Amino acid sequence: MPPAKEDNEEKVISYNFNSEIYQLEEENKVLRETVSRLKENLDRFTHAPLMVCSVIDLIDGHAVIRLPNGNHFFVNISNECQKLRLGDTVLVEQKNLTVVKKIKSSKQFTVEKFVILEKPKVYWKEIGGLDEQIEEIKEVVELPLKKPELFKKVGIQPPKGILLYGPPGTGKTLLAKAVAASTNSTFIEIVGSEVVQKFIGEGAKLIKEIFQLAKEKAPSIVFIDELDALAAKRIELGTSGEREVQRTFMQFLAEIDGFKHLGNVKVIGCTNRKDILDPAVLRPGRLDRLIEVPLPDKGGRAKIFDIHTKGMKLAKNIDKNKIIGRMEGFSGAEIKAVATEAGYFAIRDNKTTIKEKYFLDAIEKVKQEEEEYGSDFFRMFG
Image: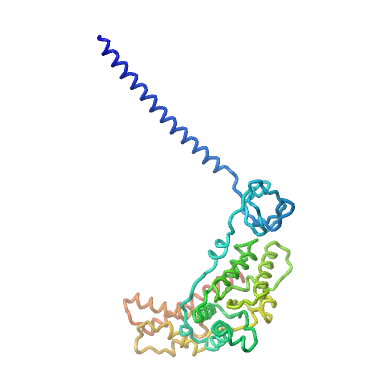
């Protein structure tokens, strides 16, 4: 074989061998990177999570922190941690509770995700049978927000808040939304039971931030539903849960009193159980104007019925007095339910005109549902 041909074959073999080595090295590099990433993920998944706490005091290079369950601990601060101030939110090790890192305050998390923040579009004309209550709310809430200069000239401070009380479904929330709409105020709605149940250890902080948010969004109305869950008469049980409710309640009273008047922030409490409220929340200077929202009388039921049926096509021979009489003891919410159910009865018959029979059948259905709910309630709690 000629020498030139042998040299060419050796070059080809050497080139192929080097190519295979290069390819294997590249594959090995990719595999090493993959293994490294898997190890990092494994370390991350097996690493103990950090705990979120609040700094309540700083003493000689150490911190006093409050855990989510309300317990306080005197702990070390890591050298890598940023400079801390009172009230900061920090991450701590679970074993020794050493402060590792400062994080941003969770105000947006605690407040704006857990309140209903809106500009209502409910108007006075959409509320029937509550003329006296509407006039009183206009006087106590609407007038100070629309004409604050009038109160300055007279030299008096308008009430800071009102309490709406009465049976469920009588229109308490509608009244609060209507006054917010009439004054173009921001409507901030919270539920008392959620504040004291969801935020153990954070209730007082949440109340403080809610009122801060209300001042930022002023003019605003803070509407507290189920106020009795937050402001029930205080008893000495000594449990951590009861102490937390009382701390939250005391913060609520402090926010209403305050060093500065609430100004364009009004508080409207709502409850079905006025009898169990703590007298402290009802004293003059707090929720001192009490407005009862009762079940509607015959005239009120007729107005509510007209409001909820104004968009419906009613048969000409309907005896409205008969229908109104059958709904004695009904709340506004139940009258609305009757109108809705009557519409469903018409749809089932493939009709667009609502007959008297549909309303009477709807009344019986709503009554039956209320009786079933009541019997279930008494079986559970009676």
